[in-house]
Length: 150
Image (cartoon, rainbow, N blue to C red; front, top):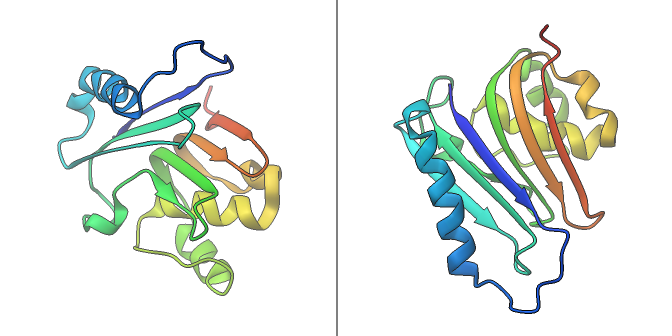
């Protein structure tokens, strides 16, 4: 399985940290979990440096580069990293194709589409083995969730 990392900074720093330094910190974190995915590595930090997402990829469902993460919606407002396997992704892909511009065939790409369609209740529609982090910049909403395994 893949690996994910994220940060959310609540503080206003007297000495701002550079974007490059934040990306470096994400890279350092991803180095700790690099064994979880040899196929790709991705990171994203928002413009003000308050939110960052990182992903290490093990390609299974969609080995193409279009499945690389973090995922972003077409407006650049919603961002997500997902680890795991999501069931029924084909059904949701068909259901939401008119509302969401899917870039590839990754099962994990449905997370943003479900969030845009259902809002916070999107979590009740996810089935599978997963962990995720989602950032909605417009609402300044940060989600971290995992499946309901015991």
